[in-house]
Amino acid sequence: MDPNLSLNLNAFEYLDESLFLDSSPSFDFDRNPSFLADPTEEPDENDSSTTLLRYVTQILMEESAGDKQSMFYDSLALRKTEEMLQQVITDSKAHSATSGSIGSSSSSSWSSSVPVHEIVVKSMFSDAESDLQFRRGLEEARKFLPNSDQWVFNLEKPAVREVIKEERVKKSHQREVLDLEEQVRSSKHSATNVEDVEVTDMFDKVLLLDGQCDPQTLSENKPQQTKKKKKKSKKKSQVIDFRTLLTHCAQAISTGDKTTALDLLLQIRQDSSPMGDASQRLAHCFANALEARLRGSPVIQTYYNAITSLKETASDILKAYRVYLSSSPFVTLMYFFSFRMILDAAKDAEVLHIVDFGILYGFQWPMFIQYMSGRKDVPRKLRITGIELPQRGLRPAERIEETGRRLAEYCKRFNVPFEYKAIASQHWETIRLDEFNIRPGEVLAVNAGLRLKTLQDETGGEETCPRDAVLKLIRKMNPDVFVHAIVNGSFNAPFFISRFKEAVYHYYALFDMFDSTLPRDNEERIRFEREFYGREAMNVIACEEGDRVERPETYRQWQVRMVRAGFKQKPVRDEIVELFREKLKKWRYHKDFVVDENSKWLLQGWKGRTLYASSCWVPA
View 1 (cartoon, rainbow, N blue to C red):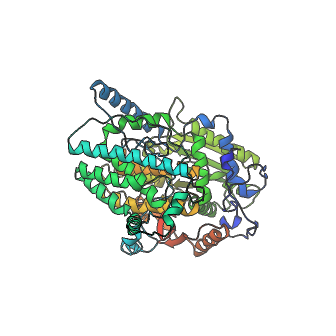
View 2 (view 1 turned 180 degrees about the horizontal axis):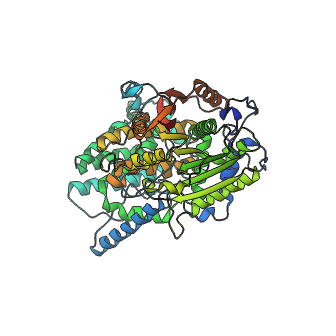
View 3 (view 1 turned 60 degrees about the horizontal axis):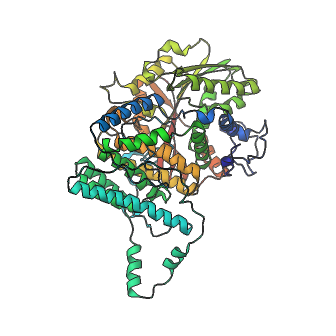
């Protein structure tokens, strides 16, 4: 097993039967569970706590995993965009046009690794996307938003690191500042020539924290003897209100005030960092997206180089996703909620047919398969129809079929009769009903986990809206149960400034969650923030119209859509909410993770902000 996967973090035992049915748990929760097990130990075949771990590890250990592109992105859209970018670059060179850099080429920065604003990226797991609260209604939710004072972050608390690393950080920021200063001067003098900056190594570890105070930090903390030094210390203790700076920069961009926008970006770059605290990481991430929106085509060369040279493999992304699973309970509790709702509907059934919209690698189902093994109160046969975006190449469904083969191996291991069908479609609303091959007598369950947010929703009304069309397709299937999990977000507005302000609140919660649960120098955390949060923020901020695919809605908005499509909602029992709260304590997650219920939705969040919501529906 890869040594990078040896990190031990408190988490949970995955196959707790109390999470599925109203039976007494048969697993010992008093022992210290670990999601990321010791890689030197061979996992026990019958140890249910490592089911998902073994499944992820199996994918990582496959001989070809390191050479394949991740399924987390829409590869066809990416390929199309790359071809478009290459054509623009060729045309640009033919006309002797210059292209500039964004930020800097510092090896400690990942500012150039995110795609240009035209890129269409479809990500399944966002970890979380929302700005509303657990309490009732938008107006009440506003009460939970931080006031202006809470959004002022003291950057005088130093990120301790070795002296050499500190010097490299300063050099990195100096290059960024010099680059932006040149842009400001060029803007003020109507100059257009900006030299190309080559994309360098994006994953240099020069900013890793070691927990020791360097001499410079110690000297700054000593009592000051002279008035001059006191004044200098007082100046250093000034705080940076990143939220205000980012918002003003976005407003300047929206009004076409390029000079002001570049000035503000310069201020943000001076104190932001991809290795800093939550506010610094947020500012760094959003500065990349704002500059991409501001400059547009001049940054194409830099971004194109980054796209072609720094694509993460499936193995890299899976490692980062594995650490994400260990640090937050969001996805896991969604899985268990789905399991319980499906099994409640499938009691005494002979065959259970699950249609999974956005199956990806199939992380959700090995635990479900293991639970079905040898039990009499569950269906005897399992059918899964996996729907996913096509991959590039001559076999667009190849990766989805690989997911089916892995699940088949698990079913064979646990003696569960299994049938699988893969459907690769770029437009899910165009899938025909007969492609699902629904058979009489089987219990039909539809699962949609976090993926419907990428469907377009503004293409000319309800009749032609892809988002509503998919819901109507599911209604025509007449499922026995439809489990819908969403990213609870309110930054789907067509107006840029409104969308930007909501995104600031939302993504700060995500970075803050990681800052409280993972070390700042964790390599997989950095990769996850870059590949997921960075790409999503780039898409939300820099893209418009059809290129903008990150379109989360609140659970109240989805509730209206579901009812309009012909579904009625099943309530979330109080005992489920209490059970999940108990498990959060047993699994030793951070105290600021919250589980609640509102309007028949199971809500999950961080520090009072609702990030995910799950619900169960049946045809009306």
